[in-house]
Amino acid sequence: MISVSRLLCNTVSPGDHLRYRTGGHVSFSPDNAIPKPVVVWNSTRACNLKCLHCYASATTEAALDELTNSDAREFITDIASFNAPVILFSGGEPLMRQDFFELASFAANAGLRVALSTNGTLIDAQTAQSLKQIGFTEVGISLDGIGDNNDRFRGSKGAFTAALNGIRHSIDQGLRVSLRITMTRFNYKEVPAIFKLIEEENINRICLYHLAYSGRGDRLIKADLTSEMTRETMETIIWHTVDLHDRGKPKEVLTVGNHADGVYLYLKLLREKHPQAEKALELLKSNGGNNSGVRISAVDNTGNVHPDQFWWHYSLGNIKQKPFSQIWSDESEPLLKALRNRKPLLKGRCGACKYIDICNGNLRVRSEAYYNDLWGPDPACYLTDDEIGAKVEIA
Image (tube, one colour):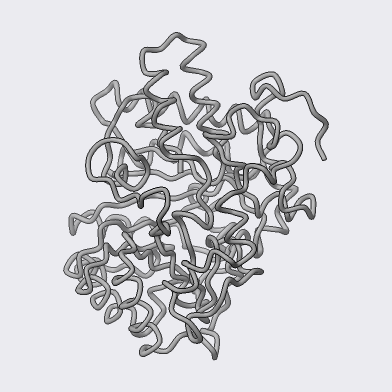
């Protein structure tokens, strides 16, 4: 994640201690220790919507081989003992799992910070109250546009209204809400309207996701933004972030899934001789770029462990056979070992980029999907050769 608000406005937010090595409580492991990752748990494949870009390829019913309640408790106990900083309940739609509240309470009582990623349509007043009582640190609610445009993406008429009601119920309970949008050619023009929405609804945080070519999202490669569209959208995001800050209504603004954004922001600050430029560079270096297989992990509904939530096609192991802590600590696993020391493996523009310490090769699963080469250049990098100091042909 790239914190646009922190880099541009130096706005400190609750998640910064997970994002940077400098300042405040530091949750990073020593360089020679096994990293303790945020764990995304796709707790069920069941979902009440049919989103076009779903990386989990969710279905209407839960899979028959999903983790049982007993499996889940063992898993949660293990990652709590392993000192994972956060468990993010995701899906499918996690609220469709019958024992969701029981397991969320179990995780919170085990000492884990609990967060939720949901489409928001199932959050009524009682559900929001229950989430608050359990101690959820954040409720992430996804939208993909305003009104009918969101409903088309989500495959359900009325999904926008239901999600908006979920947002309002959550805010009424004092929950920290994070609005999430995946940017494509079909909705990027709605980014200003989304910023208007977060201001009007008093939403704390917005996460703007770049498209990952995974799950059903791999069908949308042609729907991804061009470099020109991405740059245009970044300028829109920058303008609204600064505008809200200057008007005394600061929001936490994050972009997700493309660490080229960090370089883009730094170069913009540098060109403008902004006093925040060097501080931004320091923060980006401390973050270290893409952390798939390092400080981010995922466990799917059947117990397979992945380097992040977009790697469902590759399993590092299954928690039914071996605890997550052991799987994550096995540095002889080929992909895990490679991702933790990827820089020498990167090819093309990524390998030649002078900002490799900031980006760390960006999203490897996207390169694999596009070029059939895990270590090729990330096709979603929109920076020019001159900007990254590279003069090579795309592989």
